[in-house]
Image (cartoon, rainbow, N blue to C red; front, side, top):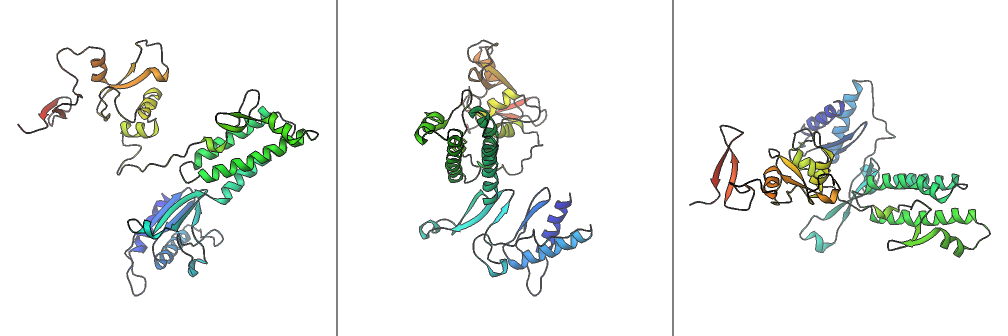
Length: 346
């Protein structure tokens, strides 16, 4: 609530008159816990937003710390911003870059790239190196058991942005770190002997760290998945289980099996290939007919009427989801009944 108020104050100030001219550009405030970023396309607008926030914080006995307040331009080096280009927020570095003249003819003259910040990379690599430094007496399985959770957690946090180059770089550094750890354990052995003992080919990769029970999970094994934009006007609490189940594979009131199947099938019924809607009921279909076989590859999510159609329970009416000239629309008078209308005139 507090930072929502600060955003409203910024909006108010951006529409006021600073000096002799009028600022009408929009201001954007992105907040998370006690961190926030204010974006504006004019220097005057940023200054007025800062004054508004300082005035608002003063009423609560707080103030902005100069050491933690940073001004930056996302594209160019500006004197008023002390030459700062781009900014760090929640472990990410957000910055814009100029593009070539051929690209700018049909697109914008800049491109926004989001990466893991240098501080985040250094902290993560330091944690991995610390595990190896303290684990000189541990076995390979114990080292892998300690490294894997940190690698998986870190990569899943940054796999929504431009991180492929970062993942490769970290794997390269980690490989040499593990090699040094192994050579310290066998100081009287040659480097070739150490590599053959600890690094083995598997899964298309020449050097894998493999123990008796565990295998090291490299950073590049986590695929890059671009963040999909939310549909306009949606909210996790709007009851739209079809949209959120397809996007996240889980939703409030949606059981685990249906959520996973909904995401796996892309929100479509496997029988009629039409999208699920909030009003429609769903059924889990067992492909082999054995209801005790609940393996994921044996399950399909269908519309209720499509499920009946598959099992031959409809004799007098065909499946209303078949691709035909008839569409079904809710009746205006009673939500439980329907009105059939032809989709074409005549």
